[in-house]
Length: 245
Image (cartoon, rainbow, N blue to C red; front, side):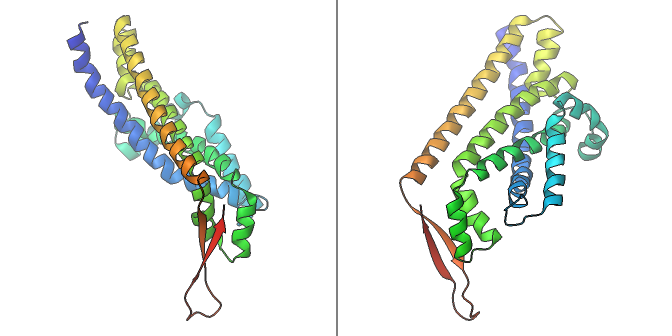
């Protein structure tokens, strides 16, 4: 296979990979972030402490993490067809990719949020900050560098999952590697795809590391965590409370 022939196949497949990973990553963050926060908030000592709810959420997350991705793809075929209208192509692959990534990301979020200094949380509560205020003004800002790192880790994992999805008609670079590189014995083409995936993963990791370093530097350079507390009299304005780092 010539280089021109490779390019004709690789560019559409690369775009399909970006699409399935991008859509899955966005949905994963939107659903996995609150799920991870709930794991912390409903745990013992959390603002929403609720042992039964925490156990149920933890069990669901653990179940999702324990299932191999290839099993998730096969088990969710009916659900995938109901959502995407098909079980092949990058659109269909997005469904199991998202289902498999949400529990993975939720655990990363839980770990990131638990690293927040407990003293800041106590100060927030003592100043009258409610649960939502504490999450918005303390937990998320203080854990932001770690959360960004978790997003990067999840995106890289999704790229690996997307390549695996190609083995069952998921499209993208994984589909090319299997159907052209492996089944048609185009070993050179398969290694070109492997190299491209390595370049993509490396670029994402470098960009993610750069963002994390900047966020970490900004946080360590000083600043304040601001909270809003309502006064007892409803006609008076809210006070702005400042927590020093």
